Amino acid sequence: MNFEFTEEQIMIQQAARDYAQRELIKDVIERDATGRFPSDHIKNLADLGFLGMLVDPKYDGGGMDTVSYVLAMEEISKVDSSCAVVMSVNNSLVCYGIEKYGNEEQKEKFLKPLARGEKIGAFLLSEPEAGSDATSQRTRAVDMGDHYIINGTKNWITNANCGSTYIVIAQTDPAKGHKGINAIIVEKNTPGITLGPHEDKMGMRSSDTHSVMFNDVKVPKENRIGDDGFGFSFAMKTLEGGRIGIASQALGIASGAFERAVQYSKERKAFGKELMYHQSVAFKLAEMAVKIENARNLCLKAAWLKDQHQPYGIASAMAKQYAADIAMEVTTEAVQIHGGYGYVKEYHVERLMREAKLTQIYEGTSEIQKIVISRAVLGK
Amino acid sequence: MKILVCISNVPDTTTKIKFNNEKTEFDKTGVQWIINPWDELALTRALELKETSNGVITAVTVATVGLIDSEPTIRKALAIGADNAVRVNANPKDAYYVAGQIAEVVKKDGYEIVICGIESSDYNGSAVGGMLSEFLEYSSVSSVSGMNIDGGNIVVNREIDGGKETLAVKAPFVAVVQKGIAINPRIPNMRGIMMAKTKSLAVVEPAAMDELTSYETYELPAAKAACKMISAENVKELIDLLHNEAKVI
Image (cartoon, rainbow over all chains, first blue to last red):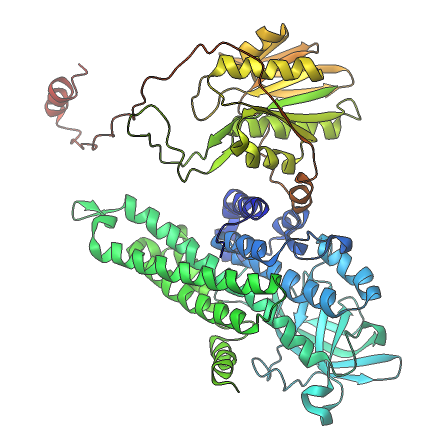
């Protein structure tokens, strides 16, 4: 075994850290308060290559491995998960989905601008009545011969407004159940698409989340990814990789809160000595460190398996469930260590705690991950 | 014109400084190495000048005096955008030695503009730039906080007591640059990181030079004493402590 990172991986980690600690930190609290989308940061992250970092350079991507992606996601998420989620959806759902399962024409037309970060992608799976239960798609894509007509509503869509390239999961043949589902690339400016209002969320408040309504939206058939009926399988396979992104985001939220708690415990005095000299605080920090290290190892293991072209679905489910759950625990403890200061926005940890909650919910709740893991454990 | 930027490989500024048991050497165990922050700003400005000079600046090279363990730092400079690099394969013993070795690189490859950070964040000697200009018999400008090239004209800005100074400079020259030369160091992008592996990193053996310095011992500064808070009304106690305890009055 080799636990050492390569020189390139370290450079990418440092680049992400430098940008996050120097630039994202400046307005993250203001954007959390106002919900303002970070267009300027997304442009800069695109210029640095982070939005298409996993894509093959022949499609204008960065050609980096998934381990590098974990390192970058952790560093960005330590400071600002609203930016990290744009990066995650664009890289591991939209770019990955088109690169892995799309045809050459789709890669030329859609993948290249996404990899360059000139366009942002969104993945439209969740519906008002189909969240984790992805088989129950109500959105219809009716086969009209040379095109589809899409009708329906998608909920909780990250990048819905800033994004211009949608991958829509929709039911074409209800009689076939999940085998009648298709994944279709839809450009946002297609007539018949409208957005609901910006969701006023608990955390990741400056990420761009809306519902998206489709009313007789005509999409050419060549925009379908894979064979007819491949959509559900496409979504599940793509989400396996997506989990690595969100697991790394949860890891970053946890380690960001932890670093702040360590720093605070060295500075703040109580009863005549710094907090770190109180065993109750020191033990909390020790327990937080162990959880973060476990989460990091799970994320890196899943990433390594993906890079080695080995099955990684179970590993990514473990990483996502564990990292999300410990992110909630670690951020809560970080607030506790900060005491009253932790409860005010200036100290960041309450925001990280609110952000952590979402990682237990989106791209497959912790409970869904446990279904995936338990099925593997039980050989079902 | 070609620019050479001198790069020092220094411990990360958050490094906890330790020495070996004999206190004769810095303990490098677990240390993360970075480009000296002033050199990183110098490189950023050099790249900006190249990009905006309409072809007047043809290449930006970085040079380091260091052993093979300094190469990750050099490759980061290549990832940031330097066109190529030279490593003088030697332990950077002191400022005189480093300046002498860099001078040989400049003489061999011919650079019109040589840029050094005002100091390195490890030994803070602030000596290499001046010594280098002497070795080369180039003119030098110290404390440069701005540099622009308009056609063949080079203009530099200096911070001086009570104001600023603007100078027109003729190449070849050495610029010793400080904070302000660039706003922020440039962050390498993915393409740069990938291309760094393919760029030239020439390793040259050091020229024979006398060693003028040897280190006897290192010592850490005394730990900061605890801060005593004294009531603003209690001037007598303040005077007493300054006189008898701090012994500064």
